Image 1 (spheres, rainbow, N blue to C red):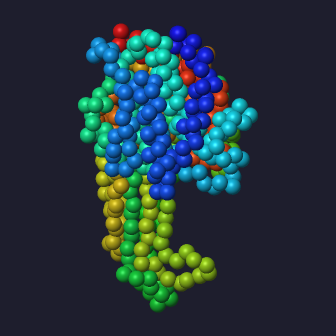
Image 2: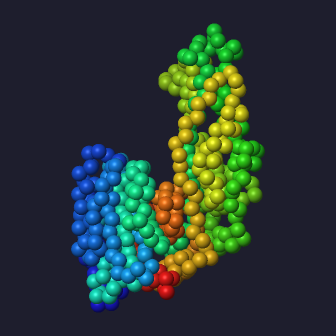
Image 3: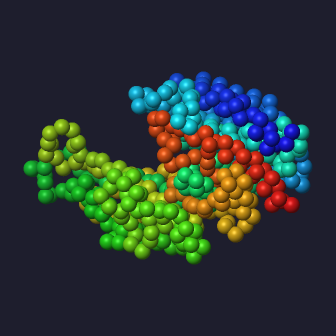
Length: 455
């Protein structure tokens, strides 16, 4: 049977199997679900073996990784598929209209935790591979599969796993479907992600809280000092003032501006989604350019002093803040963290002590837009969705993509079938049945399109 005909004939079966996959409460962040996470890994590994992908559950420092492969010829291109079988916590339960681990189809949507993030999207590739293997035809590419169980709880162990198993994971291209289309009827190829670096800054003044009447005006107030330092991190045009912050920034290309200009984008609708009073950012850049192509520095939290009920007249002993910088290609997370530390020390007066804690980060990633990978993905999406995709970037970070690039030296195709309003990480997570089905046919077409790149 032809692979496409196999997909046509097994629609009900793959939905039934997806429901079985979704019923596992594989919440990686909660220790009381550890057995469920392991059971889900075992079930998925067994299914991959059943459809013809030789797979095994491999230990890490936390929840295990599933690795599978089907290698038929060293002359074929090798595709590495990545996904995750763990899910976000289900709370608050009272906001779900149906059980988070009791999948149903309602108003054209698959409703369940993990429906779109990432079990449903991962399943499109599993079923496309099954369609090929069940047809009696040999896959035109070699395939490898790595599916982790900690993506929703920090993925702390995956980077080490990749480094320790680099030879086993060696591939020509990586495919991930764990994101969204640009909008309804507008499938997207995501060709870039911003990176991130994260630090904490703590300012300490007196060795204890002091009476503000007895000592106010005679010693520095750490909150006042930190507030002035934070205020000095941006200028009046919202540009970051850290020395050398923009030295390595990759500028926006004319091609990118042309692509962004083709996208339907309504600033009023975008603003309404935020609940903010007005938009804000670097003056000379559009909203899409700001969130996709420009680096940022944001204070994520600030604390210090008394915050309980009523007043307390003190000079607090200390104040601290958490800072993240979103990075663009060519910026290095460690370098930006070092520059930020140096600048904060420059701003900090001698009347207080400054402590900087660095928490690492992830590099920005960009897939070359003039190579064969995006063209192959575009053709596959045209087959599955009936329309050419748009090309977008994401303002967020997927650390594993940077790890794959750094350790394996391989680019990643980010192909999302979901929608931005699928309630990922929220109650009533959902995935449109139509998008799931189109994802299956696109994943099938992608196998053939990638095979042409090697040819």
